[in-house]
Amino acid sequence: MKLPKLIAKNLMRHKLRTALTMLGLAVAILAFGLLRTVVTAWYAGVDASASNRLITRDAVSFIFPLPYSYRDQIAKIPDVSEVSFATWFQGTYVDNRPDHFFPRMAVDAETIFDLYPEFLLPLNQLEAFKKERNSCVIGAKIANEFNLKIGDILTIQGDIFPGNWQFVIRGIYTPKDKTVDATQMFFHWTYLDEKLKQDAPYRAGNVGWYVIRIDNPEKAPAVSEAVDRLFENSSAKTKTETEKAFQQSFVSLSSAIITSLEIVSYVIIGIILLVLANTIIMSARERIREYAVLKTLGFTSKHIFFLVAGESLFISIIGGGIGLAFTFPVVAGFGAAFPTFFPVFNIAGSTLALAITFSIVVGGVASIFPAIRSANIKIVDGLRQIG
Image 1 (cartoon, rainbow, N blue to C red):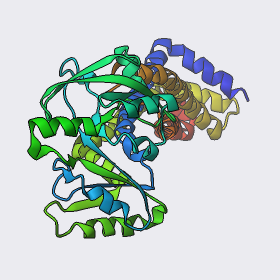
Image 2: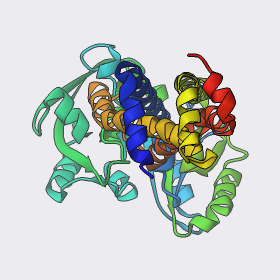
Image 3: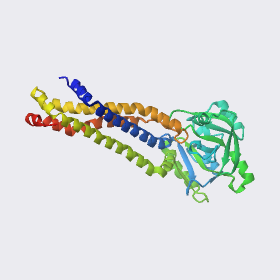
């Protein structure tokens, strides 16, 4: 049988309708891929979290600081191999536009890159950073976005910590892989603390949170409990959790938006399913007499079924393939337009798998009713059909 040839002929009988249906499918798959990539970008920090890192913050809220004196006490807890810390600095670079935002943090210059080996910084740049009190290290994406290089002065207008802060760029780190955030800025906590001792002594001697590396990830619950128990009677109680749980707490703040995007992405697939089903139903209804004639020539119900289903699958697969092909440059362009807002913006393997699956499933589901109806029609009834 020459079913593929007949399917191709049928597709070309209404070129505009076929082209528009394929275009609709392509746009739907592209929109699905883009929305799903936005969703996965929100979870990038969660997925990239290390299992051997714990975060200790104030038990009441992340915005409250912890005493610097906690560091040595945490370091003495069994199974803790190293302790570092950071403080959220924020401030304004150039202006308050969203595309000028990137995380700015005061850190322990001696240990921070030991705890985050996924931030690749050349040894000579690391040593230069450690030696200069007002130096900073920035991510490669920031350097590319703002055309910054080593030796440049980076000026930040403080808000949480008022003042005009100037930092010398002494290092540019690159991400270990595409899942690592390359849009952060790190500078010396000691530089911040010295300024606070002069301008606001009551704020000095505090850090934002502690980063703890443990020897065995399986002992994370025990170490977390030990840290929090150590400070349960202090004025600044702590909450210690895995880095993944810590990142997840931030994502949960925008869970309603993320859920809405996920729902919309699946609604798009549902809509295009209805559009394709309508197209196939129209095509099958127009050809009822032809199918009856084919049956008189020896074609079976099975042949008619695959003739209709094949046309639907062909449209959905080609349309989906076009959509997937355009998804890559669109996602790349979107990520390039918002490099600091979406530090990690890549198409996940699960998104590709879902898009391919939906392209096939939509074609199959849309053809079920018209294919069964066309296959089961009696020859006499088909020949009587008009239009």
